[in-house]
Length: 217
Image (cartoon, rainbow, N blue to C red; front, top):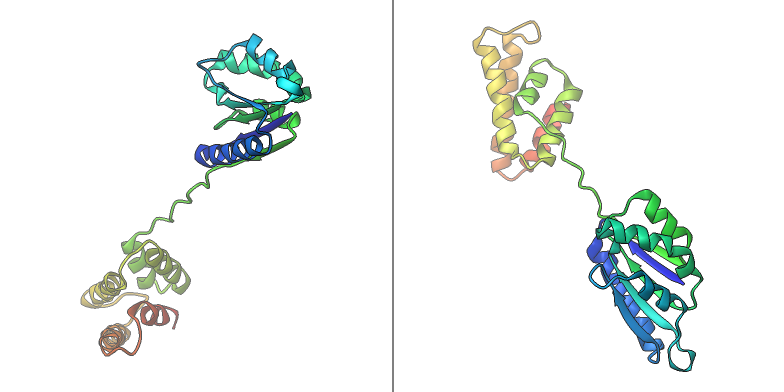
């Protein structure tokens, strides 16, 4: 009989495997307990564990600890999986990251198996403050908002983003405007950004939400 624990979260797999082993040993105090690892692995010993019985026919509990770390031992052990699965004794197999073919072979012969993988960290979307300013300068409201939210989610301070937008509009104004903006519009935008800053200081709203509302307006 096999209980199989494996996955990239080896600490969690080990904890669950040991919890089961401890629980079984409490329920079956008469059972002999063995640990099998790469240092003491021997095919003949495994075969004895498979067919052996303790005093008064008590079952063995065998904890198999990451044999796949040795390629040769792993192959020898996998060749014994069918017999292990058919054994009256209990084998608790612990592995870390295992190739698909090997893990599937053990899973198919297991009474129960548990895969505990680490969650992959999703990289935060990178942002570029200048891209945010350029999108605003092009009057691309949707792109500006997406880049703004990305910047905020990456931990950028709203004050820095406010300053970047003001710098962009001021630069266009000093250049005499462009095909997207008339000088009067630029003056109005700069005045709105200044007003937002002062209203934040008065406590009317948070800069993050005020600036976002400004971008979407």
